[in-house]
Image: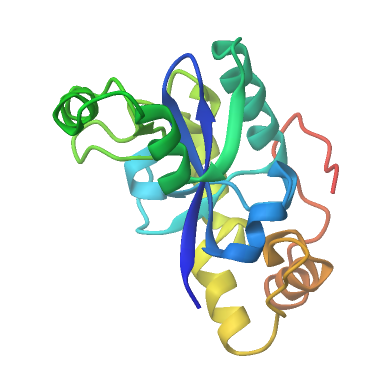
Length: 192
């Protein structure tokens, strides 16, 4: 099966957010059916080498702020189709120069070893607070590698209607094995 990177592209900022990686069937998914970006806790300032998803509240903030920064609109689709569509009429050299200067097709979740996530931080500064990073890296429900492992072992089914990250099976897996019960970030309501 061919796997595709799906992005949310900002028509004004020319930035993109990687929202999913998987089969072509995800092309019909709404933004809320994708898992959203997976971030390295160390690049956020954490101590553990862990890949974390964002809390739903943080995803909502990220997408809302990204939308506000792009009054001309955003577009959800495969990265290759988006890049082809929005680079038409430009020479490959110009596109490459704009990309190298971080002026076009810059993924907000791309890391810089020394700077962490410089493109994401203006949109979502809340997740860079040391207390939040510690909470995120400790929460099994946000652990992307743990989810992949649970799917591979057959403990959580891989789904075609929405990402398994949002499934009741994944929530139950985390609750039953790791004691994650009804917890949400400080000051937030658990809306799922």
